Image (spheres, rainbow, N blue to C red):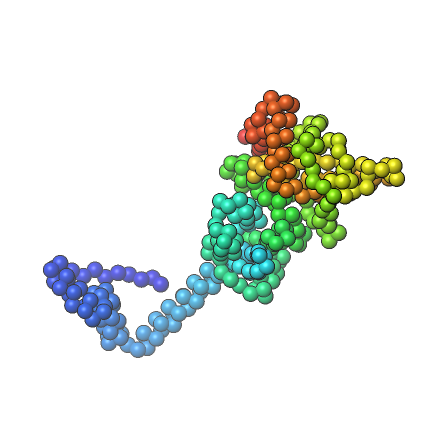
Length: 347
């Protein structure tokens, strides 16, 4: 509406008295004057002219609403957490990277309140139906520009899926998306394209397929003893984690429940303990690779308990100092700086 204001004058003592009197009636000077102005308009402007103006105003308002709707950009979330599902839409123009950074901060405890759940922490989010979420997906695939990002985050299964315009739904492990978001966000680069390139390059090859299976979790007849944690070889960085090669100087079948300490086959294990650069903590599992004599291999994991994680961290610290003359935290920071320098183009 092309509205104008009308300025009126009254002595401040008169105005104060009028405001007091109107307040007793539950109204204000502004509302009372607006009512009087509307009455004057109805009394002096012919009905036919008022109707033409009303129709013009209605048409302008409808066009304004249509224009606003056409220019609205939606983002959609399907969140599964603690067995509960939420379908949400926002008008914030969030994209895959924005959503991943938001998720990472939530998981790390620097965004929102985990007691409320992720769905309750997203600013401006409105609950929608599954059918409305599917409509957002259709718009996304039609590349109409109305949907900037659409994701499914399953905290219960540690999975993060994003709808790509060209390739459809792509599913990743939550930790891989979190790590990629960490390096993109950490770059500090103001150029959005650079941050996107870092993010996508970190996710390249990490897509899960229908044939992808979660690694088998190993269980043996006993736990890993602290004195059996002996590292060797170089410390490498893979996917945002420092990999420490663990010598198999103990009976692996007792700890992992495997069948390699035998003459029945020529299989062996490669074992890695990992340190997460993002969280600054030892990862919850050992990566155990079963290498078969036929040349094939199979990835498995061994869940560390709190005592084992503490022992692994202590041995990592000792190995870092012996190998590189640095504390683990210092070495990790140096690796992170190298990664950022390599992934951020020089201007």
